[in-house]
Length: 260
Image (cartoon, rainbow, N blue to C red; front, side):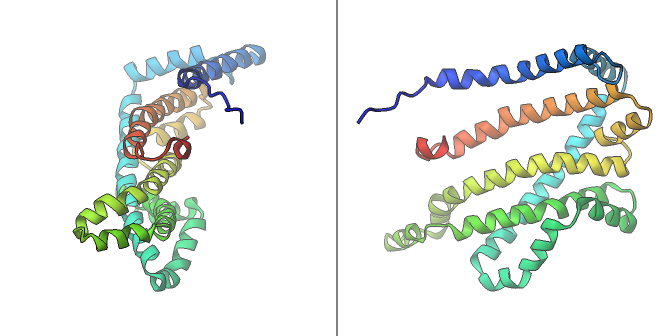
């Protein structure tokens, strides 16, 4: 039986470095073809980023949005992991509160935001609470499925060899749940960025979404794209410098064909 030849890992990894330049090149070509003031080139947008960062409040707005997203992310992940563990372990609790989770998954984010703003005012607490309410059900469902998928054979083996409880949790349960935690974290980050920006447009005292809303009122497309590019740069850095390294470290025990 002929073995399939595998590509060198450097070739596949090197392709990622061409992805972003290719996108910028395509953007540049389209902007030149369209040749309209509402479709600026990436060079013009990068120049606008520099101006807003040095002369205006871009860095402060990005920092404010990131802090809101970080706080909401930590709270939503913590609540979702706890609730998902309870619902996955106790079926009666899942049957009793499963409809609540279903409602949380499907209720429009805009409705939650408006309701929180009406009840609590245009405050930081209302914004973060609205984000948590929208994010926590997704983490709960992911962790619930992870707990249900646990291989109980490892637990029986640990009991036979009288492994202490906390060591059993650390060595057998946590490694099995980490893929689900990372999946919930990655999908949660992608969701939270969007939700925070939308809620900032609705009502806040600063942030990327707040500033984009002002640019929209003035039809300032360069400002909108400059803030978007800046925020996306931060998101890409978090993905490559934090999430992927964390994933490689935590899931390094998995066979290569499972992590490919």
